Length: 238
Image (cartoon, rainbow, N blue to C red):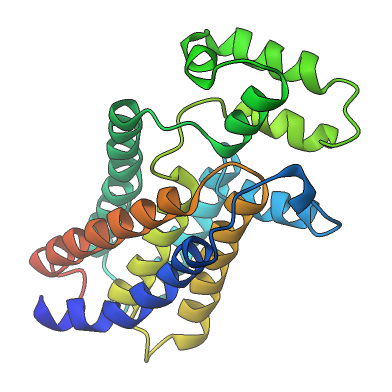
């Protein structure tokens, strides 16, 4: 176990670069941050959004199965169960933490100042009323594009930790621990880069603060270590 912790330290440091750099420069999301690349980040973030995240997970599961050495039916079932527990378990834990921390999203903080609504009052509204509020306020906005307003309407919950970051970072750490960096470094690097782009997208679209990302990454790291422990116990990996 000590070896795999050491093996994941460098990738963990790389994953933490984005939130720590943003904290260091004291950057906060504002509509002025939106530019021509913002919609590309939206497409990237959608790969970790429901329902597209199911397709992403299915692709990764097939990839993991294909690259698994000495495949057997028992190993594939055990791998499927392990991955399901890691991804769904992480999202359940994330939901519980969000309800406890009750942190407002950056776009909610911006809207509360722009439209004179206390952000705490916003979160007391039913989801349908939150969506209606966003729709009405941004209907003729020259600042916020319609596609982003719709994205905000689909995600009106609390902010900390970032579920998208947790999802993508979990897959990245699972690729490192279960696939092995040296054996499949191109694929593992590709998944790490995707996870980093997800992090940036969550900041760029006003969905999360760097602290949200940081907690999501650390939670993903812990989950991947637990998953690796059981993967060894169930002889999924050597």
